[in-house]
Image 1 (tube, rainbow, N blue to C red):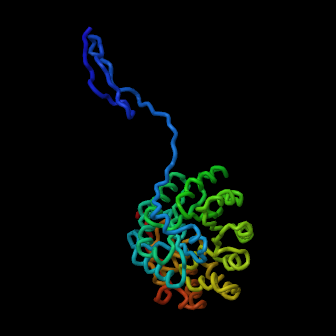
Image 2 (image 1 turned 30 degrees about the horizontal axis):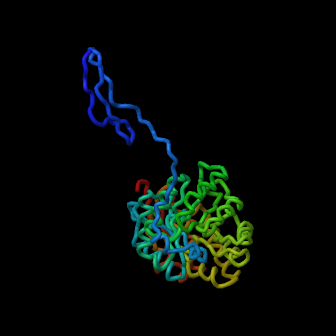
Image 3 (image 1 turned 180 degrees about the horizontal axis):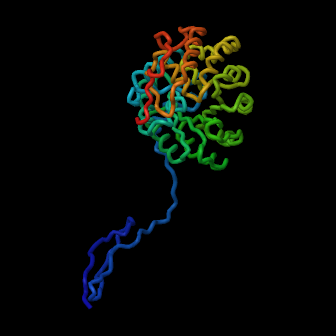
Length: 367
């Protein structure tokens, strides 16, 4: 038998602790012992420490979010190659500020957050905070059906200065109600949070008892509720802040059911009139005047109508990230007539409304 020194000092074992070996004996068949051993995981308790800065967090408290009456779910405009058109975006946000809008949801359903990479998403939140954070509250849609992604995006969103987060319940891969509570609790501690209930998109309602459970957290600013005004009344009776998520119901929600305000799609187009609807007291005449436009906006799934409308107003380029495509010609003509009936001066932008042809639009599939 021959004696062979196979290794001196530390050998890799897959753990944080090196193993030390002495001489090893081998046979004369040229075989020898290996100093490698299978990876052995140390069993230890794990816990999540939020990646947050109190300097950043203290810029906005939950109470500052709770008092907002008009929040626009802001549109994301595109260049012909599908990248963000920040010049058009900035102009649109400025129009919101000039007309009294108090907050914007960045990268929500209307802003097509589902079509963004997380890098794009966080960049747009950071850009909005950097340019407009002193004049308007920036609420980033950092929700996801993956708890891990929701945690990571929310940490990043607050790190770049957003004032609040919007969180949806897990969709497609739906969970139990206990799982839903655990999902929201994983992100609530990071900063002011609005929970978004839209069963038509998620396929699962967030029942009131879940919200009441989560309302024990001081970081819950409130709920964006799309189920209807009876549900809104149930929350307001229990002192939970709620915003209507339905433009066609927001007037009654605000003045008849106790809603704080609205998170609006229509305010992209008519921010001044939506401000009047939320701040000016009961106004059924104005509400009735706006309902045909709101019905038109939601003829097809949002944001198809909004994207078409803003393009016809000349506020954004007529660029669509697929799978969204513009409304058909007859609906584009209908929009032009609605603008004339309501009054061009009430809409964003300065150009006359146009009826765009099919070949005026860019459809971008890779971006």
